Image (cartoon, rainbow, N blue to C red; front, top):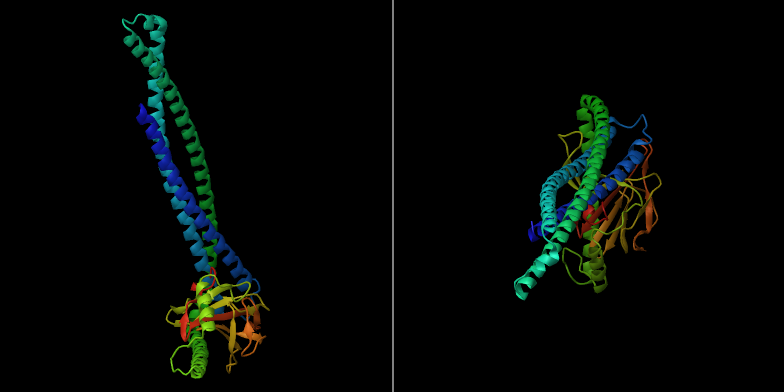
Length: 404
């Protein structure tokens, strides 16, 4: 227990500190994700569930409940990760505490034995006499050095006991905090799980109603997909026409935009801001994601989305996500207006508008209002469909928009 005792203490402290710091960082990351998710769930409640109307379709209700339950389940999973992380850290700290207790006991026993020996030595022989009785100067010097080293060792052992005792107290305090936090998370999870159970029961009742008319709802979904596909084809046609017209002026027949130096700079700035672009509405939540996916309710039906659908409050304004020029304002039969904005060889599309504030050829800047999002009076839902294209290739908007 000489130098090894101090070294062991330092190693224990270092290992425990590293583990604690790593766990704290992970816990903070999970807490930040949960905070964002709870804010999203709050928006879901406000945007989708605050003013339900009787004439809202069963399919719409089940879709929205499925979306909300999915977010709640994500929240529970994050909390479980926090609980598991704390459980591991509690186990590490308990083992460290037990090890420290054993080491402290051994050091104290050694220290007590040393004090007793020192006391016995004092009573049998005076220190001065011990030095004066030396047979030579060299022996006296060695005895003096021994006494100094012995005294120094006693002081080191006393400091070691104090340090280990303080470390033990700190670990016990940290352990108590971790156990308290774990209990809070367990209670939080139970509350969230009860909410999920309640939402599931409501969803199951609605699904029973839905199953009676599953074919009808499947047909509705298919019709909606056909309308969306028609708009996407028209957008694709308009972009191809814009590419052809732009390239004709430049004397090229490329299938993609032939960019001027100014266009290249704009496109490069657009790419440089990937993942940092502002949302196309000031407040909203994504209720349908990009890509091909099974319908959340009618599982036999597949839906394809070239962008995302964002639920937003009534009268919300759609806004440009980056500087650019209005490529087209599309008014497709049977649908609401769509605005296309060009950013070099990138295009952003804003579908399902009630009003349009811009016209073809207008220059716009980031966050400029370009229209008002349409509100469906029968469902009281306000939803913007937003897409990003590189030339004619659809991109996943969640990779471009900040924290989407």
